Image 1 (cartoon, helix red, strand yellow):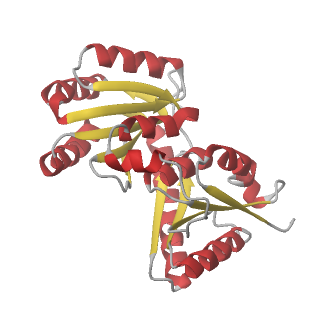
Image 2 (cartoon, rainbow, N blue to C red):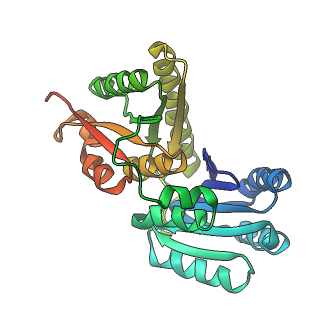
Length: 283
């Protein structure tokens, strides 16, 4: 399936391609992409491959034919993945298209964004040396796993946002429970049952984050539930939203460590913005 990642960039859009793509996925996604092209003209696109398993045959044809019909409607396409065959796939695609397509490994996500922004006035301004005086925070992102302890990280993020009159962004990542391998015995279990379980978890997360946002009573709040691993999802969303502060919690042993604590150091080292790690009590 496809999932759009909210982006605050003119003419740059980002999506996640998750699992094995089907014709149905493309029938839902391509009209949305076409509408963006009609509205904004030629666009640049960042495609993150999340637990990506390729295409069904009809879906592969959908991808190829759309690309050939609209190759002049894309300025640049950055493909971000984790495996060597993802890079090979991007290289093959580049050979059949006039669009500039470039592959980046997941650890080089920021380089992918820099490449998409390259040559734009806003990108030049961002690359210039900044003032020695720290600037007020304008967008504060807090990573949540809905454990009781993560409420401390949320409280700290809300406190900072209020102090700076900044936008507060809440994010939670949902990892897919199951995706069948090629040798999976479908007689034992129906993969559709697991996909349904994934959707139940996703919908429950939507409900929980909406409740948290409502209870904050802070008007300048935005919240998102995105598919993917916690670290990569947080870093991707922070980049797409031009966040200048990430707040996360960690105590490194229990509870929140399962989703965020174990990746807090990855967020610290992977983010280009400031990161505050809220020390959480041991259970």
